[in-house]
Amino acid sequence: MIRINLLPHREEKRKERRKQFYAISAMMLILGAVIWLLAHAVNARHVDSQDARNRYIENEIARLDDVIVEIKDLRNQIGRLLARKQVIETLQSNRAETVHLFNELNARLPVGAYLTTVKQSDNKITLKGYAQSNARVSQLMVNLNESPLFTGNTEVVGSVAEMLNNRRVYSFEINVYIKHSSTPVDEAADAATGKG
Image 1 (tube, rainbow, N blue to C red):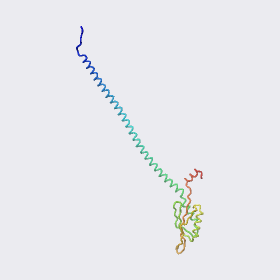
Image 2: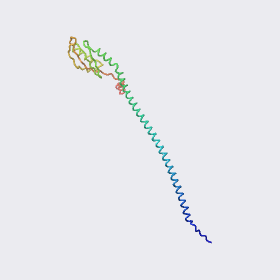
Image 3: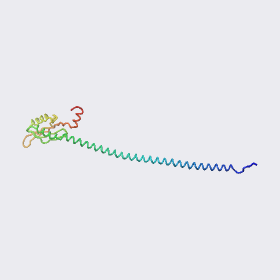
Image 4: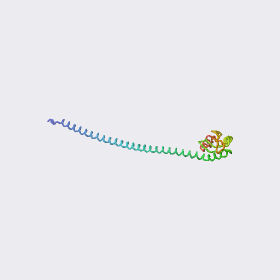
């Protein structure tokens, strides 16, 4: 005898396929959510790691900026110290110049003339004083021109006859230029260029 299945097997198969579809869809949604969460966690970790690196780089840049400021301050201090050192070396090299100047003026001053003022401005020396006659002033100029301490470019600013203590004298003003001795720096430069 032939058996006919009148039960709605197609409906059951459809329901079963629908259940399988929903189950697979739910699993796919769950799997997608898990994958998304994992990707998000990995990206968040990368972002946090990069932020940490950026903070480290910013901190190092700030530290290096502080170091650069310190270096600039040190360079300024070095420049000031070198300028002071140069001034001290210049003073050291010219400290005996005043003694030589007064010795030379004393040796070159003729009898009958005396100085009241000696003023130096760089290498120019202004001499003011009194002499018994213009011949004494001329003799002083000749003596100063012959001196190895001076350049030989003696200039008379003025010589005027005056009465001083009921005596006729000549008030004079002379400019003379001193030769500066070479400094150790100049001597080193001359030696390097072969001039010495």
